[in-house]
Image 1 (cartoon, rainbow, N blue to C red):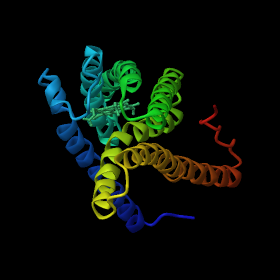
Image 2: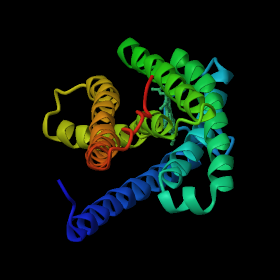
Image 3: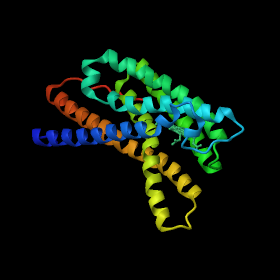
Image 4: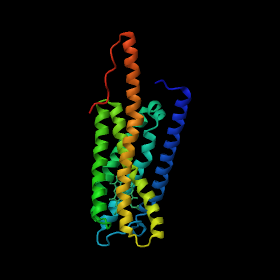
Amino acid sequence: MTTTPLSRTARRRWWWTLWSLMAVLAIGIAAYAVPPYLTGDPADSALPLRPDVALHYLSLVVHAVPGGLVLIIGPLQFMTRLRVNRPKLHRVLGRIYMISIVAGSIAAIVAATYSLDGLPSQVAFYLLTAAWLYTVGKAYQAIRRGDVQLHRIWMIRNYALTFAAVTLRIYLMIGMAVRAAVPDLAFEDVYTTSVWASILINAVVAEYFIIHRTLMPLARRRQRHDAAAQNEGAAPIPTGTNG
Ligand code: HEM
């Protein structure tokens, strides 16, 4: 199937709108959630803290600051123009992104351990940390091997997990609005549901993007190339996204 110039333009506009929304939400949530942890005063913490554990506040500071950085860097890394025109900047930001995830993850494990929000949320945070580290590790491995497509796929998965910090806060806001209408609803239930929903829905959305933005265009390109090769008697294109 051939793509008309009009549909390509419309598709570009659609992705640009989506990218802008993602960037605005990422900057907005980073600007809203991180500053309370920049003052050095535990009284400014948005979360209730264990009064007897100084490490609890420290873990939130060490987690929130790199977390905010990762959230803001992510959309830049998906900009094709920046990747193509400034590959060195893409690499530098990628390293900052990765180091921030490692630091933010270690702190997240401590924060989850001291969390007062209950076991279901703690388990979700431990799993999210493991998935956050695993996906960024796989993305790094792929790019070291020179497999750009696979790197992109793992980075979409990784940023979807990072973006759980945004969707969690959106679901919490919705949950609090629902709770105002249904007073019997416990805050713990709203919180736990929001934590799990932010992770699971983002993971599903990531797979949708991977199929529609990476695998389907690749398959279409391969089909077109194979058809042309058949016509001209040339060799078929090799596959590029194994693993
Ligand atoms: C994706 C992996 C992430 C994991 C596993 C994670 C884990 C955690 C955990 C365990 C807590 C303590 C929650 C509690 O006690 O109930 C927390 C709080 C927090 N996280 Fe994350 N987080 C992640 C991503 C991010 C990102 C990308 C940001 C960027 C803004 C961020 C910013 C914060 C902030 C500011 C808090 C303090 C709570 C608040 O004031 O809302 N986190 N996170």
